[in-house]
Image 1 (cartoon, rainbow, N blue to C red):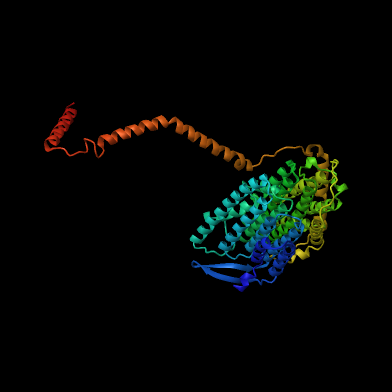
Image 2 (cartoon, helix red, strand yellow; image 1 turned 180 degrees about the vertical axis):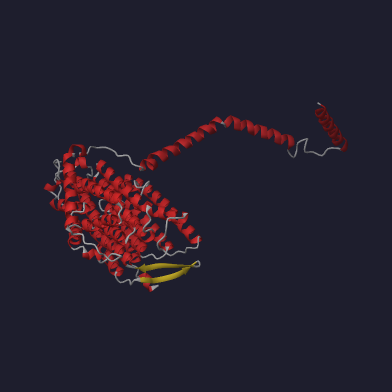
Length: 560
């Protein structure tokens, strides 16, 4: 039990709850110190099973560690620490508490050695992330939180039913690799894919994340989708269907990000796009592909947090998030502009940035596996990433036309957090072996070859040229983009309202018939009820007469 009490996820969850009761000064120290303590504890857990217990004739393993668990738990704890620094000026106590419960639950999933423990932490993640979204305190965030929790309840129900069926089939609770070849495993896979932002429920992510506060979106971007990536790597490596699901996510994210006007919705769609690369890599299933998916999840958390930190700084300083209302901010927000550009280069896989050394592993795995069409689609998608996140976001927010706004760079804690993430993007890009040595399989990949670098620079060059050639078509106007969330935001409520009204109309139409039937029943009851003539005691002569009459009637019918 003492080993379990030092579980880094539980430390972060319990500590986050206690922060609600602390004085402001102590809460500030805990906001920085708790994630760092969790990060320290992550690296104190030895490989293998650390703690087990029995539950209803099943063995639970709440604490099990290996290289894959440690990799994801490390970046989750690091993200919580830098996110906590970024959010030091956040006035909402609930948001930070919920964010740390959210991060701690994600770490708990990483160390879960059985499916039941995974499910418990999975649901705690849903609660924590919903509270992060709800704590923004606006009417739109409240409604978004309701839709968000409904989608994740659906995912949790599918996951739980799948786990129950998996156990019922005799497979046990151990969380290990599975094949999507039976109904329970398919339900488990579906529950995980919903959290990953896979179709047809991809729209929950851009529907919810942009409604959080300037700091809440940073936390939301890091844990739910990447925890799903972790569970897919461990649970469903090499399932080919994931290749095509991932590629759909890649292009879905690109198309909608190019159409979008809100800067945080652009970056939210970009999350779906980037997770698509990871899911496709998991579907390829080779050691190179799985290393690439894990490495890309690690680097994505860093550069996407950096991009959302810069967007959050703009939102906090200007109160605006529409690209059509922004521009020219580099004049007064030079540090934020620089950090946003570094994040944009990293997500575009520019050489010497973290994105280059991780995403290229996935595309190389497709090439090594002779998956020509997969490689071609991933390469084309890389150009699309540069268009929507590498150029569009920084160009329309910080450059293009001068909006006349002159906000300053944000508070010191926010600037420090952005600088830390920027440094990580560059350090990992320059020294990729720092990341490669953490990966679950041995790495025999060299990213910086002449062929890789030249090919990527050519791709980025022509993508950039295409952007400025088509700039007139890409300029944003105040528009609304319809997505699949329309079905549960508008179609389903409207359908439910119509059904209720239709039911009331039918009730009104059939009310006279109902009254007539009621009268007939009452009449029959009075005729054959306990006090009616038919239900009384008849004399023998009367009974005999009734029998004779019935016989005569029957004889007439037969003769006719």
